[in-house]
Image (cartoon, rainbow, N blue to C red):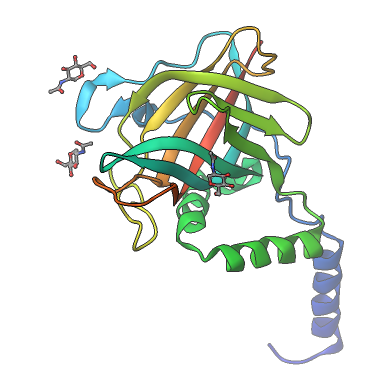
Length: 234
Ligand SMILES: *[C@@H]1O[C@H](CO)[C@@H](O)[C@H](O)[C@H]1NC(C)=O
Ligand SMILES: *[C@@H]1O[C@H](CO)[C@@H](O)[C@H](O)[C@H]1NC(C)=O
Ligand SMILES: *[C@@H]1O[C@H](CO)[C@@H](O)[C@H](O)[C@H]1NC(C)=O
């Protein structure tokens, strides 16, 4: 482009337009039109083994990325599930970009160094003042009752209502703890425990599986990440 006052003006107007453009959104995007892809409900190795579907009266309320650890104790040389703890991050705006981008973030979560991850989140928070943390996931003391508490005071306390192996090609975890991806699940609310939501699907899992045998004392933490799709009864 030949340099002229007119071309300079065009560049300046363009720059001002960029500055005036709304800040890109990283959290709190609308979920209308988004639904779980049909293949996510089916055992990749057995098409007659499926997760229970979304009920007619259920509506998608949140999609969050859980990143944390699946914990295992060791009993007679065999790892035994011993709870899990994860921080939940809003993924709604990643889905506005594309489901593939949401998947990249889920896989990336498990492979990234936790310190770098926190630094990245803090940087985006400082730049855009985005509130990424949507809540926490943990287990009640019986290790069979998954609980979710969201920053907007909503919550879910449930149990497993369906389980199939992880999607083919799932991220097996961060080396040296790369023993596989935890199964896809449908969690259903336990009655009378004050759940805001009716069900939560754990999908696009990465990592979190224990080795086949163990010799550790106490509890071993295996990093994992997953997408949690949260549904509410209409
Ligand atoms: C499913 O089948 C694939 C391809 O044959 C295999 O690699 C994988 O281990 C199987 N997964 C399970 C959970 O059996
Ligand atoms: C496939 O899944 C169905 C339903 O869960 C089960 O009854 C059947 O035994 C499974 N088949 C194989 C080969 O595992
Ligand atoms: C599991 O691991 C996390 C660290 O990711 C830890 O904070 C938590 O106390 C552990 N134990 C249980 C029972 O969840």
